[in-house]
Amino acid sequence: MTTISHYPHDLNTKYYAVLLYRNGNPISFVCRRYKCSKASLMRWNKKFNGSKESLLDKSHRPLSPHPNAHTEEELYWIKNYIRRNPNVSLCELYGKLRVEKGYSRHARSLFRIVKKLKYPINTEYHEKYTPKKYDTPTNIGIKWQLDVKVVPKQCYTGKLPDKFYQYTIIDEASRERFIYPYKEQSSYSTVDFVKRAITYFGYKPETIQTDNGQEFTHIKKTDKIHPLDNLLNALNINHKLIKPRTPRHNGKVERSHRNDQ
Image 1: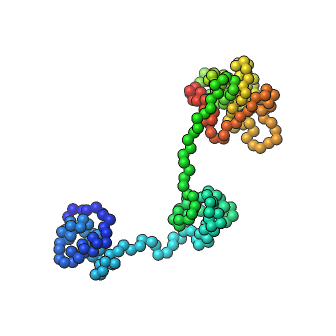
Image 2: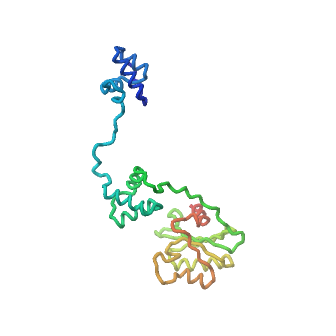
Image 3: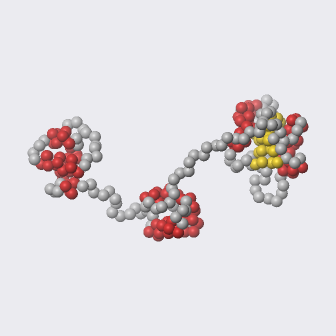
């Protein structure tokens, strides 16, 4: 007999198929009429005791809880936090449980149990960030973008092994840029490069924008003033730092470095 794929049969289909089979009809005839497999028909016939209720699907829920399931105490913590603060976010709830209650489970476990128990909490994902249009100056001397990169070994033609760093500064309005190589990536090189850039362009900008590298600013909290900030304060130039780990905010100079490759 040809094998028939599984269908989600309703209760009436199971009931009348078993009755038809018990009335002496061949198995192949019953399976063709009710579009079921032989295995399903035999399983229904074994369960049937004369009433429709005997053919109802039984629950697949396990009789005992999983050994790694949330304990009653953990469920009480979760329910109590949500009851006291209905507007709590999932991240905040997870943080409070870890710090205050020693909750050691993964955040995904908390997400699943909150969703399963239908607790009133916001579990939706944030919408994807859409970058806003960058406000590019229309006049030169408004803002410069400054960055540094390692010069690839393929670009070095010397015989002795050496390493160079390319400092790049670009005017956002005119896209004119100035580059200069150094053997070290340091605040001393940065200060010297800015002085050379002002001499090259013939004017100083209102703002110089950099990332958060240690050659441009202090990476740890300190009362000391960075050498670059000392220079810019003396020249009355504003030093703007972009958001950490967001190189697209310095996109023009980053793109020029990519084109150099």
